[in-house]
Amino acid sequence: MMTGKQQWKPGNMLYPLPAVMVSCAREGEKPNIITVAWVGTICSDPAMVSISLRPERYSYGIIRETGEFVINLTTEKLAYAADFCGVKSGRDTDKFAYLHLTPEKAGKLSLAPVIKESPVNIECRVTEIRELGSHHMFLAEVLAVDAAEAYLNAKGKFELNRTGLLAYSHGSYFTLGEQQGSFGYSVKKKRKKS
Image (cartoon, rainbow, N blue to C red):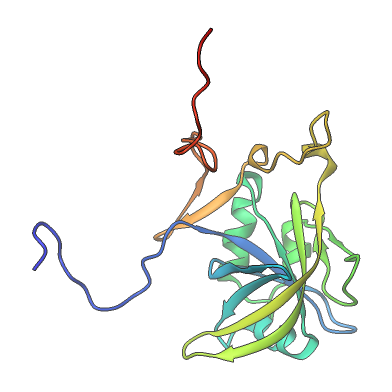
């Protein structure tokens, strides 16, 4: 037995997670937004992601029928909207109108809009739905990534960490803290001082 720890029943304790707003739409209907923290990267070539939704959620049926959605990254400025879109249903509320968010036509999708106010929009087409229990996982190919030009530096590099990204951890929202290192820093050779 481990000392100084309690063992709990199996559960999801993988935090922090990105809190993203997923936009979707049916032909001829108002677009909707659902906040999802159960989202992840699957593969880099081809670029693929996943989102997991409960079948009773309003957006579930839209995404299942249309086969497309957009993952919109959230920021500190979008924290209120992200929370609202996670607790209010699109059956009852036009979230774009209520939150004064702007749906814009996606470049590669026919129905799901991007959220203009998000610094990054990831346009996705569903390739498979895995019915796993309480949540069903939508596996999707990334068709395009739209990045706000406001975060390009003088050399044209996108500075994602300047956007004020939002994370979700154990019931609370957080912005990213101080940088602790960069990829590979633990094995990088130190320069000799001359």
